[in-house]
Amino acid sequence: MKAVFISFDQAHRDNVIAALNSCMMRGFTCWEDTQGRGSVNGEPHYGSHAWPGMNSSILSVCDDDRVPLIMARLRDIDKANPLLGLRAYVLPVEDML
Image (cartoon, rainbow, N blue to C red; front, side, top):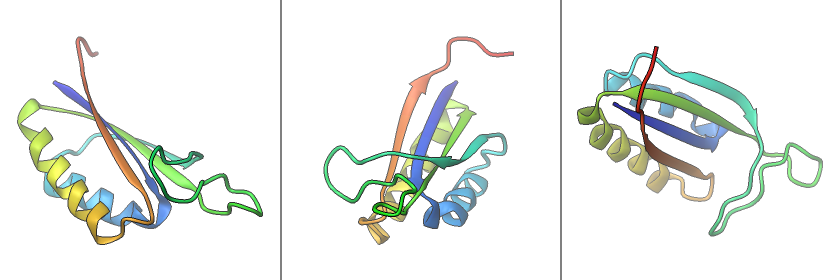
């Protein structure tokens, strides 16, 4: 099992949910308002008057074979709008209840 953590500009929300659905990744936890700043470029997302954008974040646990599918779809979303910001990280799941 793997955990996929996705942080993205809120404008990507519907596309990210659609990508999870298309990869048969039903279960996830979503944090609607998360703040951050990209490590390479792009504008900060702080929800302030100076930096009004906001992110959302999703954590989904899935079977190993789903990971290449979801990562490919997320890369496509990011390539279509690279200035909005989208990052995804894959982590091992050692145990779950």
